[in-house]
Image 1 (cartoon, rainbow, N blue to C red):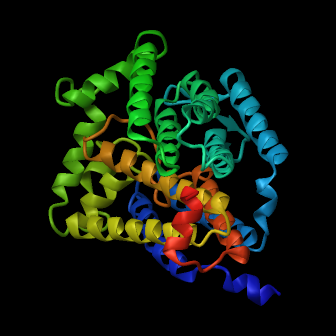
Image 2 (image 1 turned 135 degrees about the horizontal axis):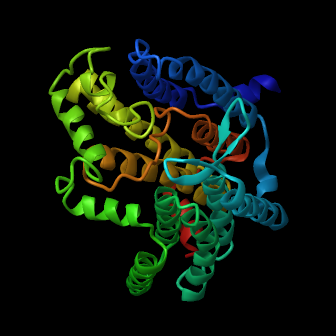
Length: 376
């Protein structure tokens, strides 16, 4: 029995993930001469081991119980309540009250909410795929996303709010929304953004958006992070400066090189070639996730797999985009590479659930899956 469960693990997926993790670890290791960052490597190794343990444990579990509405409602309301408590009792880091301080480690509940939201939306759309062109289902699903969206904006965590919105919008799109409804959704999004701009966003968040339009207008303040990041990426050139020779990170010009700007720190030391390899492994990881999504036993498993792919793609695009100066700085971690336990545990938990679903997956003809998914 254990051997069958062991076989359900996609070792090719693991092989694709390991170089990405290694890229983050060797980048953190290059900071060891600095007392302020010398402990990141050893702590991250511990988180990696724990995360892989979660991944393997979850791979043995039959997750069909997650189809139950009462369980998903309980998870959703519980995490929402925790996010509400966080606004009052949370630990403030970089101006965001988004962490619980447990002494030995910090925990960021919003990462768990992103995973739960994927499950909730997968459940909702899986039962209504035939009626998805009815706009009311888009509106109701939007309410599910709006609850955590408002709670994280109150922290205020603009980056996580972006990810939550991307997850909802993308899952609506893959569920079969019409072009007319898509236009309506973007109009509503524009109205919401305008409302947040005038009544919700803090001054520093508006400054980041201004800086997105022209990051060089204030390189000593709001544009400093992205300015130093683009210098780090550009100075890596083709083959990089070599491990331990990244001056932007070692001399502390590059902010938080172990987390938000780990890609820039890596690019400086490994250059375009190393960055291209890392991005290639990300593409392979997303490809494997989508492959297993296509083998889902029902619409729920298919949509969950797509949601996990969206989860990773949104984090990758937002993080690397801000490292390259293409998107505002939002404090979103880069999957598998950035320092921190919360996001790493949730990433592997999501993949572990996907592996657990392989127990009752199917090998179906693409046309058959399309017919079931679209309800035709």
